[in-house]
Length: 327
Image 1 (cartoon, rainbow, N blue to C red):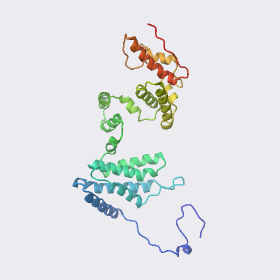
Image 2 (image 1 turned 60 degrees about the vertical axis):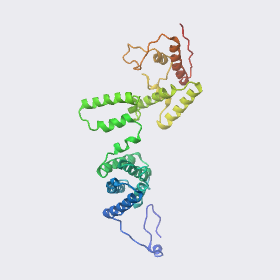
Image 3 (image 1 turned 90 degrees about the horizontal axis):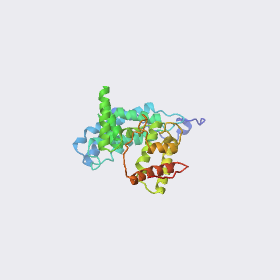
């Protein structure tokens, strides 16, 4: 036999004469559509789906065929991606995944299309190792969904995200051209998010980006939401450790550095002066904190408020401070 070489598929006649070979031509597109259309039709009939699902048979098969062809043309194997090989087994795995659907959990065409997207991601995307390849596959699925399934990829998957602000902005803003309309939409979404979702629209959008400033907002939002519900010092210290680990693992950044970015001096940690600015705001300063302030003559209420800020500061500082109020 010849020397072994990477990717070699041929063997010598001396070795192959011991075997019997059967060669089958690759199926053309029309044959594949006929085969899998019959399989999909059989599944919908035997499972008791209504006739409303009949249009999705041809749509799903054509969409799968389009994604399969594009993957074979664009996702070619390389020395570092030698497993980028696609064949009819991948095509059939997507269809077999769709065949797991039942009427009880697939009430409409939208859910069937979402299942198809999920199966395409499971079969094709899970094999990809590069971020660029996954982005390309997402764009390919978006195009196949619009061309063959006659639906919007983002709208189909909008219910799977927990970022309503981004969902609304993405769905509606793409249809607006004039700057006045976009500004009106932003103001409308900001008010609706605050009124109905009881959240901040800008913070919702900040969670979707990887910019350092938006990471800082997200870290500050974590502290504001969770720390305000904890009373015991052990719970607050545990929360700080948990957030520090999550920031390093998921955001790939340093917790203290992110909090330091909230100040005017990059790399500056929270100190006594920052704590004073946190409690006593300079309203004459145009860069003053935009949070809501409340006038009170109740010293007990003021003491509890200042103590809460002080506990948060002491949990993040190596030099704890004591609270002394003079009346």
